[in-house]
Length: 225
Length: 225
DNA sequence: TCAAAAGTGTTAAGTTTACACCCATGA
DNA sequence: TCATGGGTGTAAACTTAACACTTTTGA
Image (cartoon, rainbow over the protein chains, first blue to last red):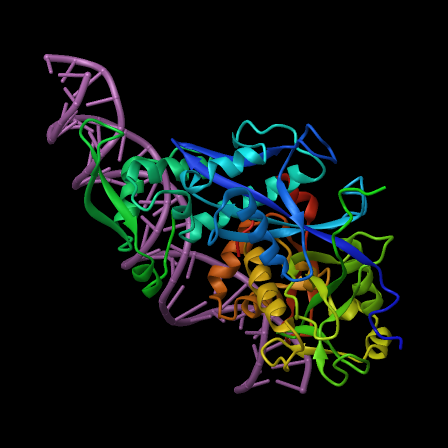
């Protein structure tokens, strides 16, 4: 019996991940130096094909977890890239996602096994296919989102200093922020809570460690940095 | 010969269009009352399947044009919906787009032939599948975009009054705007140009007609309404 | 003549920006 | 003792919000 869906072509559907990490004032992406075909030897995003038994969003989570060992990572869809010739091998429609994670929580061995490297976002190598556009769109989207929602904390350890938080936002926006104005804004956010712990690693004097309290945030979700 | 792409499943890829129109102070969507299967008799967005010879973006343009007769319409990708069971008939990955067009320029016959109707955005019927989420995301995205980029003019005739422009933005934001503050902001945008034409249809006194000058806009692209 | 929409400025409140010095500590 | 990053307040500039009356004209 013929039906509505016949006579239409089917396509490979892939996901590609723009994986953001932050360490010592630097924002980085986790990129693959491909030791497999196609485009062996070139740099690319981590990607994979959507399977029958998973949603597209789940495929993105799976692919991210295959590379980093992490589950429950903050991810957001960037967009779908569907040019006919975007992948020169076969026609593949790809859905791009960005992820924000704490570099130190990722599984180094797994990362190494995939021949993946953290690359400073301002020193990206040439990427294959339309991955440069994916990265560009992801950065833009992430920047926008980070300015109005508290997603940046996903890039930091659970406890962080205000200097770390500030340098994170400086890296996201690509511009310097005034320290006193920054701290004034932070002070108004009750869900960024000072703990009684001190970080002595960054300075002799030591800096107060803060944490993000999501329960408090959700009671009155306002954020602007 | 076996290669990288084998062993992976393929999927139907569809596009769905959230088509915004504006008329007499009302923002509407163009919806189908389906006289075909599946979900015959129910309301849905206009959609269609991506073909081999077109990009996903081009498929969206084609589908829009099949319904409205219009080409060169402002469209933006909303996101991709990839839940396994989102379409109960078959597995279909769908990419949603929103479009902004002038209702009066659309081909009424074509619209009628598809059994499509303009429905006030505040009085939407129940929609099939995940179309309600698509609409919700599209509204949100459109609202954001309309506040910082001059896309609203796509919903208006080439010549429009400031009252029309204001009521458009009131419909987009779902809230009233102060007339004097609104006109003050418009006056600062040199690319919203007063013409010497008068619209007498909306009032006895008549209102000046304005036009959006994209060339002037691009010289100094700042927009905030 | 009057109803209905068009058009027009000022002030107060709130937000954003610029800016410089003292503190605590370990080396 | 001194070099290093941590921590703190105020004032000016700018932006946003609130607010009410006069004009024009066709019915």
